[in-house]
Structure formats: structure tokens, C-alpha cells
Image 1: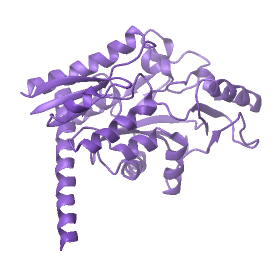
Image 2: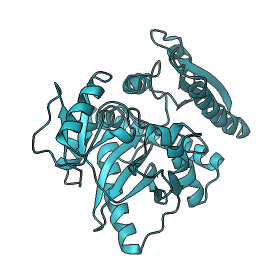
Image 3: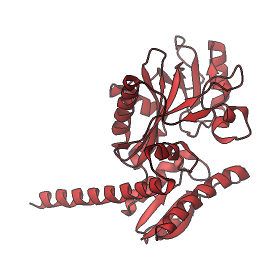
Image 4: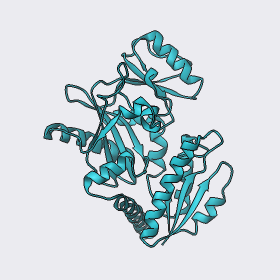
Length: 336
């Protein structure tokens, strides 16, 4: 099978570490596919350059690792929608969840309308937030992922601090979301298609004193930082059966509602000391590195990294066949 691996070629603003992280994951997936006997082509995506598109059309499958264009996550859904138009099977989520989940206020609105527990939130515009908004609150970009824009100063405990933080963020990002901070434990639940992986917990006990227990940008991407060292994933999470079922139930509903149980992704949740889960985010097509959360959950499920990659391939091919069969059925009914 001919497989094209699509990835963001980056920009001049990327650090050597950014480039290395992307290239490393591309090579990991490439090596898995080659070990399984597939022919692999690497296709970088750059702004204004569509040469990758004609190459994609000659592939049997696209393994989509492109999380943006020129480092901008908001363009990821444009790549996915283009892939949908080609008709070539591709891994990961489709355009709808990719686009919606990158706009946190829209995703929160849909989740809340579906009856799922979501912390109070508002879209901050012109540096204005409701005067009665519950505090503490966390301020984050509305259209970024990977904890971009989140550090210890993202949590605001006063109206003055909230106004200042929103103003600072609006200087860097077009849209900013303010969300009620939920105290308690943090969990991730991974999915590949309809299959739920073991629940993981992020432990914060060893963070520096005075740090808020959140997954900041440094905690995810700067290995030498105290935030990185103090943010410890544990999978499977240590949970009693009742709480495990409660978390799994909310995560499953969120995944099914936003992604229609297609592609692969992760649902992030907070659970209050009283045991109430809240959905923080649904993350379509998250980081697939062998040391990232989804791979860790896969190992807890009994999959090697190779197994995880091939499960994602199988899900994409089966989904494509299912959609084609449905299209044939619909066209036959229409003709009749």
C-alpha cells in the first residue's frame, strides 16, 4: 500500500526543538509503516504550496500528522477538509470535529447544549468579561491547542488580574476564552474510533510550591522546566470503580457527540473533590509521538506503538469503506 505522511513544514519562528519534535514523530510513523511492508512518502505542507495535493491523490492512504500550516493550528481544519475532497482515505478526525474543537467556545457551547458538564465560560471580546464571572478563572486562546498560551499566570483570582490577563492575551491572539477553574484531579481518556483506552491521570504533587496544578505549555514541551518534571502522567489511573465509570461515561458521550466516534482523539476532564467530572476539551487527532499520552494509554491497553499506529490505519480504511458503501446505498435508493 502507498502511504503519504502529511506534516506541517513549520516556519522561521520554530525553534530547533519544535522542528525536531515534528520530524521525530514523522519518522516514528514512517518506520512503523515500512516495517509492515508499506511504501511511504513524506509530504511537508507549506503556506501557498499545494504540490502535496497532487501527490496525495496517488496514495492509497494519507497518514495525517499535519497539525497546522506554518505552525498555526487554526489552519489544521483546512488541510483536513482538502483531504476529504480528494476522496483518499486518511487517518484522524474529519473536518467537523477538527474545526469545531479548535474553537473552544463553540465546542463548549455544543457540549453544554448536549447536556454534558462543562465549566462556565465566556468569549472575552474587547477586554470585557461579565462582572459576576466565577473566580478563579483560567484564560486561554480560543483557537490554539497543545497548551499554547497557558502558563502559571493563566489562572486569575481577582477581577483586576482577570482583566489584565485577558488584555495581554488579546494582544497575541484574536480570540480568548475565559473559563471557570475547576479544582480537583485531571484525567485524559483516549479513543481510537469507537474503542476507549485506559484512563490516565495527570498528577501535580511535585510541582514547585505556588504553582497552579494545570498542564501548561512548559509542562508539555520544555523538558528542562520544573513544570515538566512536576506534571506526572499515571496510566492506568488509580480509581475506584464508581468514579472510573462516571469519568468513562462522560468522556464517551463527549467523544461520540463531537467526533462521532471516528478517527482518534483524547478527552480531557477535571473531577471535583465531590466526584463531579467536567469536560475541559475534546482533542481530535492529538500528538501521536511514542512518548505522548495516547501512546501511553495504548500501552496500558496492551498495544505496542506499532500496534497503535496500525490500529489508526485500520480505523481510517474501515471508515472510508463504510462511507463509500453508504454513499453507494444512498445513490441506489435515490435512483430507485
